Amino acid sequence: MNSVAGGGSFLSFPALMFAGVAPISANATNNAAMWVGTIGSARGYREELAEHRGLLLPVIAASVAGALIGACLLLVTPQTLFARLIPWLLLFATIVFAASPLLTRNAPKIARHAPWQIAVQFVVAVYGGYFGAGMGILMLAVLAFSGLPSFNAQNAIKNVLAVSINGVALIPFVIARIVDWRFALPMAVAAAVGGYLGARFFRRVPQRISRLLVVTIGIVMTTVFFWRTFR
Image (cartoon, rainbow, N blue to C red; front, top):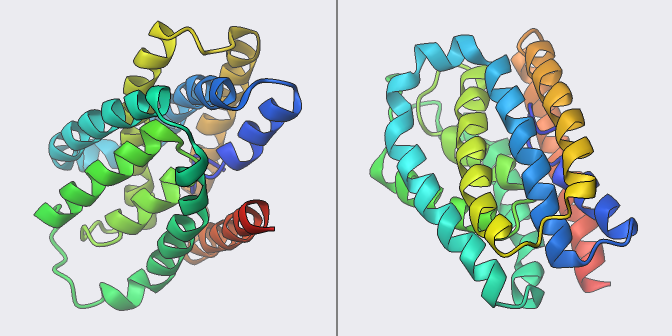
C-alpha cells in the first residue's frame, strides 16, 4: 500500500495500538518501521528516480525541515485537536488527487516544482512528522501538478520524500525513547520486503488502474477516520 499510494499506516498504526502499545509510542514505532519500508519502495522505482533526480533537492530540503518540526510538536503537544483534522485533510487530498488530471491537463509538460508546491510540501512534512497516516496521498496530490510524465514518476519522488520525512522524524523519537523496538524491528523487515515488491509490481500496472486504487484507498481511509473521529 505504501509503495503505490501511502496509507499502510492506516493498518499498521491501529495494529500496534491493538497490541497494547500506547498511542504516541505506537506512532513513533510505526514511523520507524515505515521508514525502512519506504527505502525499499524508493529502490523499487530506481529507474524513475534516475530520470528525475534533478527535482529532488528543493522538496527534500522542505521535507527535512517540516518533518523535524512535526516530530518535535508530537513530543510536546496532545494529539486530540490534530486527530480531529485528519479526516478533513484526507478528504481534501483524495478530492485533489482524483481531480488532478482535469486540473493539470493544460499544465506545462516540463517537469518542475512550482514555489507553492515546495511550500505545501513543507506543510505536508510537518503533518508527516507529527502523525503521517495518509501522508503519501497528500504528497501525490501535490506532485500531480509537477508536470511529471507518469504516475510511476510521481510515486518515485513521493517515496524518496517519505524516506526523508520518516527518517528525520525518527531522530527525536529515538532520543525520547518512545520507539518500541520489539515491534519496530520485525515490522521494518516486513515493510522493506513489501515496499520493494509492491513498487516493482505497480511499475507494470496500467496508470489508470493505479490511480483508481489510490482514489479508492483515499475514500476508504477518509470514511474510516470520519467514523473513528466523529462517531
